[in-house]
Amino acid sequence: MIAKKFSCEFTVSEAIGLLIIWALLTIVTLGLALFVLPYYFVKAPINRTFILDSEGAKIAKLTVDVSFADVLGHALVWLLLTIVTLGLAYLIYWPAVIKRLLNAVKTTEL
Image (cartoon, rainbow, N blue to C red; front, side, top):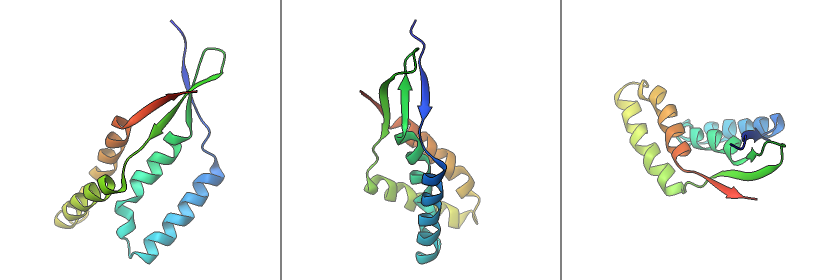
């Protein structure tokens, strides 16, 4: 069996940049951007992750490609659920987004 592992090259500076952008978007949209944010916060590190062989060479790249229409449709349903449950559904929304993104991960051979 060939040993394989993941290597994520998502940097702290990329995370800070993402955080600044989403903080501004949250202010500008009066908080509505928070329902799209989980997709991009989880998607960014996945898209910078590689599969390594036993010698540490990159053999494949992980990618998540989810259309904005899919994101928006899912986010609107959860926005309504969050309003109805006075915010409690948002706690369940994050794991639901992570599940959707992990199910959409594809590997691309290098």
